[in-house]
Structure formats: structure tokens, C-alpha cells
Image (cartoon, rainbow, N blue to C red; front, side):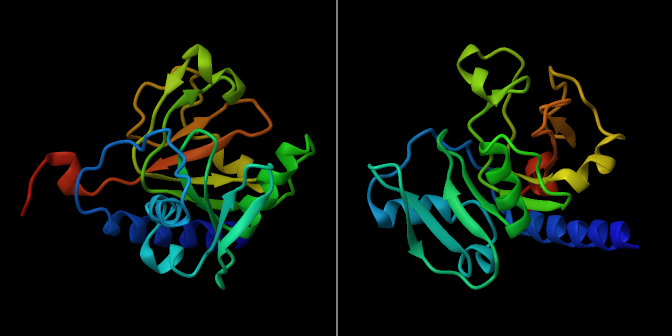
Length: 196
């Protein structure tokens, strides 16, 4: 029953996210803005306004620390990754991320991440090998299902290192501790090019 509830919740979030995308957007650039207003503006491209306007937004500081530039109330934390990709992570996704950074086993929970601006691309073999451009994949607007409890959801999806179609759901970093499900969210207008 928990799995069905989680999947229903994910479906609702994905449908809501897809409705917020109204025009084709370029992939984000790798720039991390230096001023708070510019940083916040880029970060807010990661998720629907209903999420990001009520989320905590953190900004890296020159000394390596992180500063809260917006205090939130909905459990999401939004930021721009080291590669320039804006994202919004729920509490479970933040726990997953912190466990991986500490080289620990991620908690047995399902986390949810919005990346509605798309990403700047990476090596699907290992994110630390991004500079090699081997097994390169770049995905447009998408959401991610992460966490230890998400592994059982991954089996039906493609696990190829060389992603054949990043417009369809696939497993990122297959076989690695940080493997997760990528779910592109593109409206029908973007797919067909129509402008109703």
C-alpha cells in the first residue's frame, strides 16, 4: 500500500510539473550566479512556483559554507549544483544526497527532486567523470525518484550507460550507490511543436 501511495503521489507531482512547462527552454548553463537576486532567480527555474516560493533556498559561499537566502516551510530545499543545474529536493532527497556525500548507505526512503530547467549533462557512468564526456547524457526538464527505497521501482526502466532516449524515463548511474530514476516532463506542445 505504501508503494501505491508513493507512486500516486509521484504521478500527481509529475503531472503538476508538466503543466507548468509552457514553452521550450534551453538547457541551463553552467554559471552559478554570484549575486543573491540572480542566484534566487536561476534557482526558481527548478520547480513550480507553488514549490519553490515556499522552499528553503541555499547559496554556496566563497568559504565553502552555505547560506540560507530564503527560509521555506514546505520541506523542499532548492539550490544550484556545482555544474550549474538548479534543483529542488524534498527532505528524503536531501538525506539521500548527504549520505552519498559522506560515502554512507542512503536511508531506505524515497526522495523526490525537481529539475524543471533541465540539467547541464554528465557521464552516466560516474558523475566524477563528467569531464570525459563518456556515456554522456543531458536531460531536459525532469524529476527524479531517489533513495534506498526507490531501488525496487527501477527494474522496469532502461539501465544502459549510453542512454538511447533521454526524453523517456531511464536509470541514471545504473549499478552505482547513487542510481536513481530520471523522469522527463515535457508538455505535448513541446513534443509536437504545436502552439494551440
